[in-house]
Image (cartoon, rainbow, N blue to C red):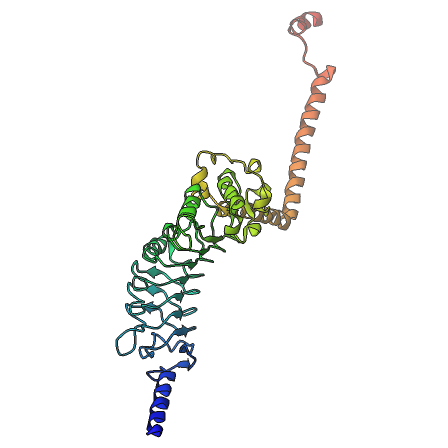
Length: 376
C-alpha cells in the first residue's frame, strides 16, 4: 500500500515541476520555480507565440519582427489568458503599433519593457488590462511618433494607478507627459536624453503633488532623472534650481545637469549657479514659465544660426575661388583700365598746356577791332 502512495506523490511532484504545455516553437523554456521563456530572435517571428504555457512567469522576445501588437496579443493557454505572467520584455522587435487591449489577458503583469522599438501609434487603452503594472519602460521608443503619440501616451498612462517606475529616456521629449506627473504611486521617472529645456513651476508642483510611494500626504514625490537634457539657464530655470536645492534626494543626477544656453553659460553645472546669474533674455521675462515648459526657442534656433554662418562662409569661399581662377583676366582688365585712364589724363594734360601758352591765347575783342587801322 505504501508503494502506490509514493508513486502518486512522485507523479504529482513531477506534474508541478514541469510546464502544463510544451514549450512553444522558436522559444526556450527554463524550468525554474518561476517558468521563464525566451523566444528566438529573427525576422521569422512575426507575431507573439499563442501556445505559451499558462504557468509561465517571465516571457522575453528580443530581435523579432512583430510590427503590430493587436488586442490580447499575448493571451494564451486553455483559458485564453496567462494568469501568472509577471514580466514581459519586448525590446528591439520593430514594434510600430500597439492597439487597444494589446495586453489583455495578463492580469498579473508587473513589469513591461517596450524599449528600443520605433513606435508610431499607441492606443489610448493599450494598457487597460494591466491593473497591477508597476514598471513600464519606453526608453528610445517614442521619438518617431510626434505630438499625436505623446497625446495617446497621456491617455494610456492615466489608468496605471499602481505604476512605480516609468522609463522615458531617449525620446526627444520637449515636455513631460502630464499624466505621468499625476500617477499617485510613481517612485521614479527617467527622463534622461530628451530635449527638455527645463521644467516649469506647474510641472514641479505636479511632481510634488503626484507620486509618492504609498499615496499618503506625507510621502515624497518620485525621483526624477534629468541628465543629458539641453537645459536653458535663463530666468525660467530659477524654479527648477530652487526645487533641486530643496529636494536633492529627488534628483539623483542633479550634479550632472548642465546648461546648453545661453552661450555665456554653456556647459556650466546648473547647481553651481545662483539665481542672479540666471538672467532673462530679450522677451523671456514675460514668458518665463512657457520657456521652461518648452515653448521658447531651444538649441535648434542656435543650430540654425550656425548653419546660416556656414552657408555664408561657403559663399565667400566660392567667391574667392572664382577670383583666384580668373586672376589673369582680372589683371588684364586692370591693366587696360589703367592704360585708358592714363590716355585720358594725358589728353587733359596736353589741352591744359595748350590753353596756358600766351602765344596761342586768343586776342581781346578791342585789339582785334583796331588791328586793321594800324595796318593802314
